[in-house]
Length: 369
Image 1 (tube, helix red, strand yellow):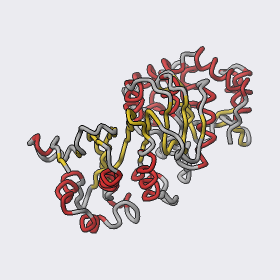
Image 2 (image 1 turned 90 degrees about the vertical axis):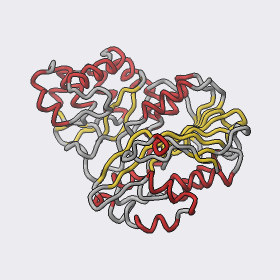
Image 3 (image 1 turned 60 degrees about the vertical axis):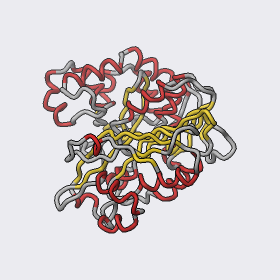
Image 4 (image 1 turned 180 degrees about the vertical axis):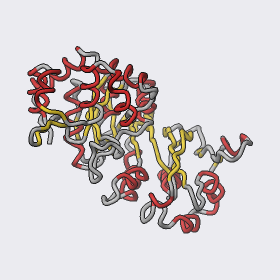
């Protein structure tokens, strides 16, 4: 898919640095009134394109929106060496008389560059594309990594684009290892590390190593919605997650971004960690996303009411306050969990969260198991 040619990658990196691509992206998002979002609104950009410098509009449309273009425009706006580098690495493909990125974009984050999937809402993206966009909470995870003390050993579990592992490499971790979500993402990981001039090791097992920091984004709900025809082995991933947390050093920490909706994913994780023993969990609800039930039919919501019958009785109230549903809506919650081995701290689950309640005991209650 992608070819990591050292010279071409260096040319692209130097060109992106030279045009201040990260600053250009920030200013463009500000112009579109979408500061803080990772992906711009396609229609809003097209509606204002006549008010944008033609060079900036061209770069943004190709690299952020994945729009096709003709060779004459490429030659008019981009240096020939950059065009050749894009073609040689596979970041740009020729289809007839048009040139286009393969349903991906170049996302600037934290002073680095990442090839990622694009939103399915873009007309430049096919409905059967298997690459999903980056979760909106990824900058928060990057900030969490930046706030950690530098250690020797780092692991990103279920990695797609290797963004968190690149952040760890930039932070100064010596041994950065990645366990990909699936083999299809390995070319992205290799490309993104090369683009940012970082080193990493892609692995298939973690049983022999101990880590100072383990991070994971477990977004099975979103993946089931975005990739309807693809198997997402949630239970296998969750079980593997428990064994991986065992690989934390005594002074280590794990940071997990977890989705929970019409499943008992989060409760399964909490129960599993409790059974493994020796772990302390602290969690905070970041946000909730509303979906109409039909979107989740035959996947997440298929056994909605039966879910509560599977929940241990002591968690029933917890589940009902965390998960909301009705005939017209369903909510998916994003939670940030921090896990460590501090023996002196009891196993804690919090918060019990429901926006309908105003009493703080419901919003941020603690529960000692």
